[in-house]
Image 1 (tube, one colour):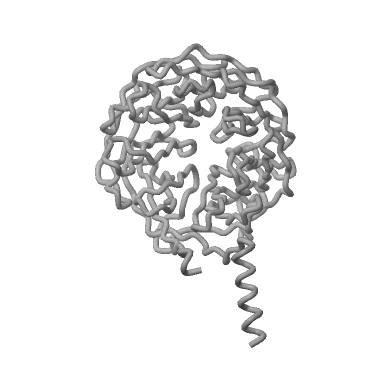
Image 2 (cartoon, helix red, strand yellow; image 1 turned 180 degrees about the vertical axis):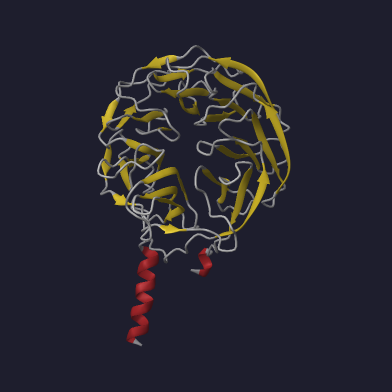
Length: 419
């Protein structure tokens, strides 16, 4: 009887204190593959789940680096995609990707701004039926025509119209204020000292000081420069957060306190650079935001599988989302590990379950054992494509470059009554 009462008391205490049972590891079902416009590149692919034709079903918008087309895969509402529509971009997409999505002409349809190869930024207007038309081109930010950086759509001057924040190596940041009719003002230029080569996920936009105004965090050679927005399209002088040289940078509220945090994956000078990448690093650094523009570093941790060599690790893409239904953000990383002993590369899709306090469980590799191909090696997206409120996995099939893989999240989510 005493033991029974003790167990009941422990259960009651856990409920009162907000403790939850250990969450199930996320699982994904068999992968379905769908043809897209072919590409010669693998990194930087833009994947966006959005309803492009107004039928209330999620479609996939795909822009691959080196391509000349936007591919739209039309969803059937059940996680499958039956038809595809390609739209000409009138040029070649930059090899590193970089695309921003939003309604730039206020017609209720998604539009795109695309970084072009050795050319201006390209505005593509959505027609509400899944098609896009090249409408305008506007200047780059910097002097290097072959180095466009990340593009982010945000309303930086609070006029209800989307603007474009563009990073450009050697050129700093450009702020293109949108008029809401598909046109943009000339760039307001912001110089960033030691700005690193602009790559996918080297800039994040979030409200770091809770004033309702978008702020910017951008990777430099020595850390992350944080710029607080003034609300009129201008920004305060950059303040450096010493993180080392970031390879990847993402903003998310990982400890659920309502403040935007930063996840940084820096280069490690003690790890030999992996072939083709020129830099390497295996650690993940979390900086908890205080809601006032400041950040508190947590102890860094490694994102390396035990079967991998510690050499030559490179994160290709990182996303934060709740994948197992416990309402705690998880960390997903597509990664390559190069071994100088075997001269071979291992690839994996890693998931690190969040604990709710900004820390994460050790990484696990996830792939469908019934599928011949592993999960993402390069860019991927996490979005609900079948309406079950679980984030599914969307990725470029790196073996062919002509297919998108979609794997539905099959994790068993426990209801509150079953806990």
